[in-house]
Image (cartoon, rainbow, N blue to C red):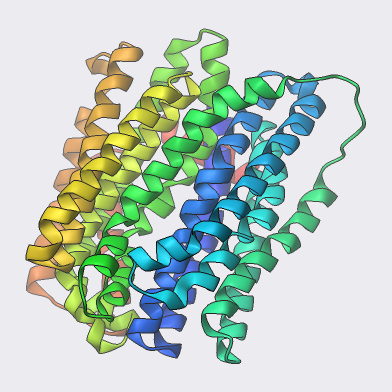
Length: 479
């Protein structure tokens, strides 16, 4: 039954990820058409800073709240109160640091116009920080995945509408920042209506949350920065003002695989934590096997479609000048695929209490991204930045894969080898059909959909979908 909870929760959050993904892509595509490539590049820089800031200062606390609430539901009031106080500390630290170091960061990016947008972007942490305590912390820890999904959908849609409206009326970069500050407040109102928080005198030690959250905070910050290191290095190393905009477009499209799969780790962490606390290692092994299987089932065909239609996809969604990022997109779709698997397995390790290992690997990945970027970007430009991302993601994935299999003593019978072979065989025709029948414009969307349906049909003919898959599907549909 617990396995069904994970499947249902993942389905809810993946449905929400589709809304988040759609609103995020519509935002980027709209911005690229409303402003110049250089201005869009600056927006990409600020949005990346916002994402890294939120990740660095907020994620660890919410993960800690989720973990301890999932393990001690009867003490959730005390955990939540201590987590809220810890979150306020991180928020204050973030605002102070970004206000004073914005000038230094803008200088390193060779653009003094970014000083105040960077300072204002730190305020996003204030509204988002309070919101995620209740949404990503409390609701996720209680495994109220449906409510968590609805709140996040509201957050992403409001953010999109506000950003586009403010940019359209001439607020440009500042309009985007203000939208990111205001939108979480709307979602927070929904979250407060869905939960009932009673007063309790029970105390949960903040130091316990801090010890768990610090490695996760560093891990998530390093992970996000490693994924976007190429963008910052392009901005600081290359003189062409339009290049960061082109790279932002390619990176945004390539992150579709990471975004779609990011729902699975959200349900895995509390579920793995619970299974480990109950010493149910068999269930943990099943979680790992199923997660890898479903991830590869989605990653490989999407990667092939985007790899084959890179320039056509860029020209469909962005102005024609952006097709110069086609080769970078091809490399990035592979790199972000590795990051998605890295994220998945590191969440399993964090749920098992190995968050320090995940942190170390993320730091190694970040170091690899910067060193390889400094080597490749002057020589290969956009493609060099993409290669650095691929290299960093591959390192993180391999390290976490080895550690996960070793930690849980996962034997061959739990590795979905046959599924992997079937997925490859079902994907192979797509690669050749893309070569034989190129498409563009709206026809590209229709043709890609038909190719994906063909892929699913081939998997079904090869009997990849088993009785357990059908049971999980019907369980989710009934709930």
